[in-house]
Image (tube, rainbow, N blue to C red; front, side, top):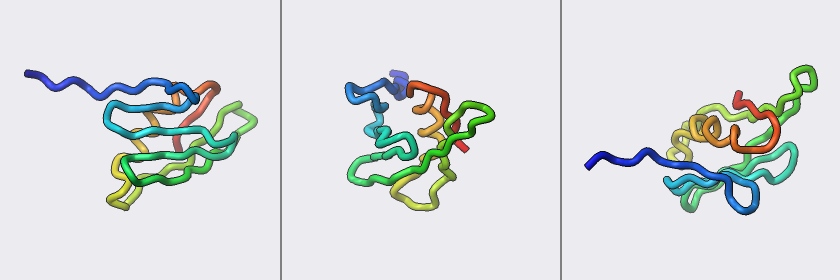
Length: 87
């Protein structure tokens, strides 16, 4: 039987939830919270006025706690209101 691809959706609080168990929440205009199981981290967000875009500063983590952080944030940010890019 083929495996279903993981899905993501907007949660009631405006964040993003994945069927894989991770979530991303906006804590403010300049801060995101990424949660995966019992691990969590904060991610800075900047604003580039020339392009009218919010930049999520997330390089790939070397920590075993946050594998695929960059990839998952790239999947999540299109679901937020406004323009976000992961850098």
